[in-house]
Image 1: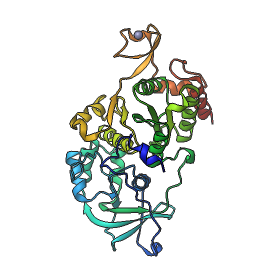
Image 2 (image 1 turned 90 degrees about the vertical axis):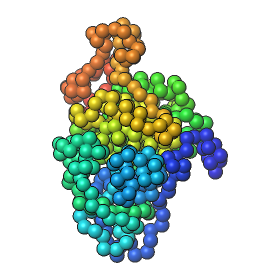
Image 3 (image 1 turned 180 degrees about the horizontal axis):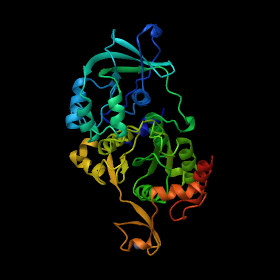
Image 4 (image 1 turned 30 degrees about the vertical axis):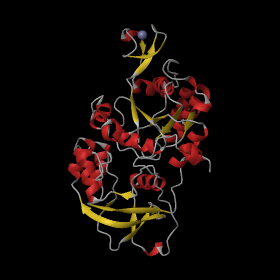
Length: 379
Ligand SMILES: [Zn+2]
């Protein structure tokens, strides 16, 4: 393919090579001991398969796990911010496990290299900066098995993507970027509908690079986040109406939310590098939940790495708003006017308006997007 030749213009995957852990279904898989994965573990497995978690080839062994918790780097020294681990209640009997979803469908195998105990509270404190069981990521951690099972994964049956037209592996987004002749690409992570504020920052970022990857997370989120089908419809109407098609790729990010705030921001940036992004947008309280993290923690954490270490360049943004006096979108960095001039609505207020069928001001939300959300709230 000609892709390989042009692809060299794009940023290299993390660690240098895009991992591919897809393979043939081995003989006798049905006779192996089976481990049933949680939805978060299934998301991780699928990302391991397609290279989104390059250079990882499987679930972390003890040495890498310890190193990630303590130094935000793999044992090799390569940056890696969050554990990608597979929990079990009991040690496996053999050296190969079948990995299944909750319906019993076997998706892959794990060649076990390591089984170890771990300290859940310590992991919570290091990864989530809290041991509070009310934190959704911590709650999940506390609820899982007592052991980690590590090893190389091979996946022969991929998860059915919820939106097949948006399912693009890193190889495919890279090909899409190369086809368009892009070299510098900014990735935008979101788990929410895109209102004017986020439209603004993606466009400000796009002004300085060749292309934009709108990469909404479609893995598991909290139940009170806007349902993924509604969000996807919002992205379609927004991109169709307000972005030049030759400058944007929309694809689904198959990760599950961990709500680990700062460390997840690093992890998200590294994953997007694997998808071919040279830049990554980090807003305020990226991947945060409740008030567990400081407003700028997810931006400040990038200072803990030398610039060359991550390679992917974070682009930091403030909250933005429509300013009546400026007559444009702006932020505290670019607008000198008082808050009365700013069109700003709280998330609660927006939800109230949408639930009663009331359109938020067009300076806050594109009417096409609001219409989709109103329809969803009525259903
Ligand atoms: Zn202003």
